Length: 141
Image (tube, rainbow, N blue to C red):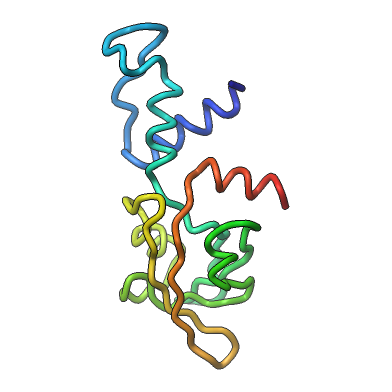
């Protein structure tokens, strides 16, 4: 496994948990974990991602800058230029608000959002993807 992937996965642990509790090297105890990659893989596979790149479009607004191909966001119909209004029924006014609403959600969970597209409001359910799927989607742009 490449060092870049290991670093990406360890960062995923930090994002998902706030800390890397332990790194097991080689066959260190407990033997259920063979190395730091196992810890990172567990976190990367459980923490969910929307599959989009967000931006602040105006004061108090969060827009979709990019929708990554092959993600639940794309399949659900999110489009660049959409403006997010709510995530799980809570109003969002910054990229950080959206990140807080998605943080801690697991891969495969569906996050309900309300968005504005032009003058019309829509509600969508976005299935969350893994970090590995997110990175693969970024690579296929």
